Length: 187
Image 1: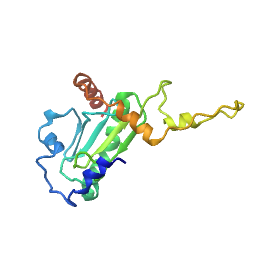
Image 2: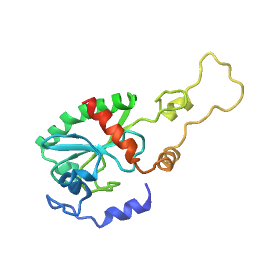
Image 3: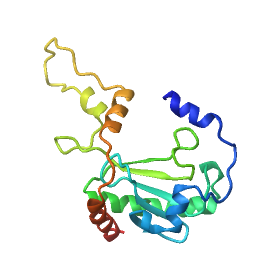
Image 4: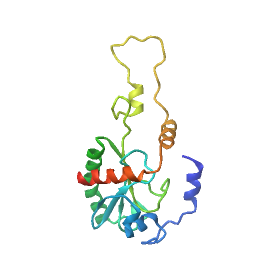
């Protein structure tokens, strides 16, 4: 990855306090008005990401502060695991997109030091499919004669990441209000 991420993790402590008043997510738990909450129960909460990769990008967090997934108590992990499919299904139905990525960073590349999962709807391509770019570009038709031209190569991981980051923009509040209601209605 990039050197700025490496530098950001070099001086981190190996353990964190159970409550972090400076934690963005702890503040969201305390004052829900700072977030577009799509789901909440006694142990966890999900809300729209303020800098989404794609429409419907949500974050699922435990209500207790744990910086590392490895430190999450099993019973809290179980509660998050029960909520995850419900929220995922609601996002799928609300966005009309059946495909989604679930990502959790621990330490390295973790921007907010509070355990969280990114629930990111897959990209939808011009033909309406959600096939990965790599799969779309590397497939060839067995019935097509080879024309002597070089087939398109799958893009590199670096190229795909650059494309993902270039298309990010801040969450639109008006769209977020509509999307929150759509997702909640599917729970």
